[in-house]
Image 1 (cartoon, rainbow, N blue to C red):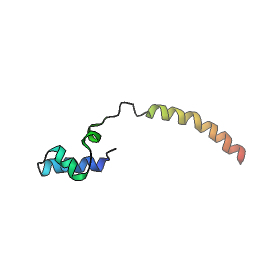
Image 2: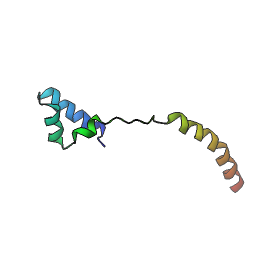
Image 3: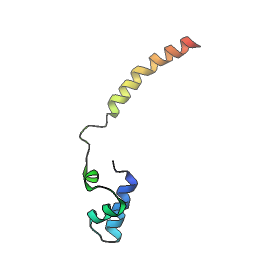
Length: 67
């Protein structure tokens, strides 16, 4: 997986030094396929928020029981 700093470094090399994207990625050691990869799944923020709302009362009860 390509990190944000790696993407930014490749974009910087591409813009400033006018090298191809392929050459910029090769210079920083990143595979081209990893840069163009896009997740197909949604990030699930709504699901995690719903689970958190369900879990908080249960955790509160459990912790209160332990003192």
